[in-house]
Image (tube, rainbow over the protein chains, first blue to last red):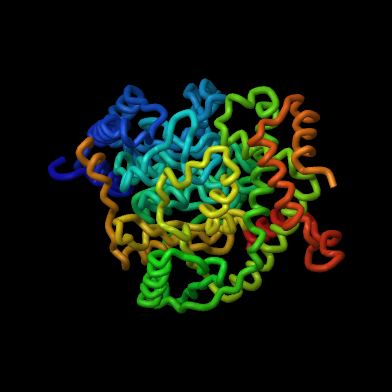
Length: 472
Length: 67
């Protein structure tokens, strides 16, 4: 192919389909970038060069014979190290599961393979998906492709880094309290957390079963939505995956929709540049014909504690035996956080679940009685410097987690879909992200608003830092 | 009142059959203090806890999926 290669999922798929580029070319390019950047970026815990190139050659044979059928045929991706593939290691970026070889392929990867994608490696992540900063005691942190001294966000740190650096056009992450949206926000890409129960978790590492969601990080809203459509839907292997109405096409017109502006919880103590980006985004949505309305929310003052109790209790259940038998094999922060599970009496966990149901009902009646979708920043501040939030197992850990996930956890706790997208560039050149939130099962509304906002703002891709550009 | 750190150490001994690290004790005692203050606080009225099914969240999501 002459000129530069496409850098989006849909762009690559179209180029392969139109035989402007081969899967092997794209895969070699992705592997080349991954290897060149790995020393600085540390996005991968494992590269799978031989199997990826073999899969790419096979994809090209199918294209040549006219037998390519999937919508993403031949596109090279990489995924967070927590998705089982038969015969491959799923390490959860941990020491404890470092040698775990899966006996079956998880449903989401099976669906992506059916759609024609191939995988070039496993991506770094916070150990066991526990950590909003992306630090990892075993593998080291992935670095922010835009400014390496800053965090990628977590827990899908490698997913944010690899997509943000342009190594792959898309990657699966997972989101329990912000783990897709925070890396997307820090790395200048799009992240889509679906409704709780929209995507199968069969064969996916568990953390908090009532909050875990599988979703994509991509370089465009349209890519994220189309990838979600491929992986979503009921699954006989995961009875918690709902038989909800399939996802429809994105809306062409936003005029009938009301955009809700959440009250003080999401607007107090914002960095001035984040506040400015919120204002700009709301103004853009008005330009697109949306009507802004006040969106009263339930009392969210205890949300951090409520969400933490649910996440740590459920996580501590999965890790109970290893916490007893192999505590020294955890990184210090993960061990410390999971230990919180032992300090939660049963009635406190169930009381948090009671509060959750009440808050959801109130949100549906009051908030979504006024608005079709909501807009809020993903974080109240710019992507932090790594040194400022690398607290390990110090007591400040709880406040770092609470502040990083302040604006993402509420939507996870309420099970709502939310899509994060870059909305502005700070004076320092850093991404500032907004999230669009919808009522359950209406990812189509959230993604439609995000799609038109992305087009209207026309920020373009964030350029990787010079050290990564020269490496690639 | 017993120090939450002592409770944390006892829980680790009982359930894990090992001593808790200092970081674990701090995390567990911090969790107890936060939760007793926020989640343990009274709900909207004195019968709310009695009247609210903890599975209400899942039931509401299911209803929404069908609507």
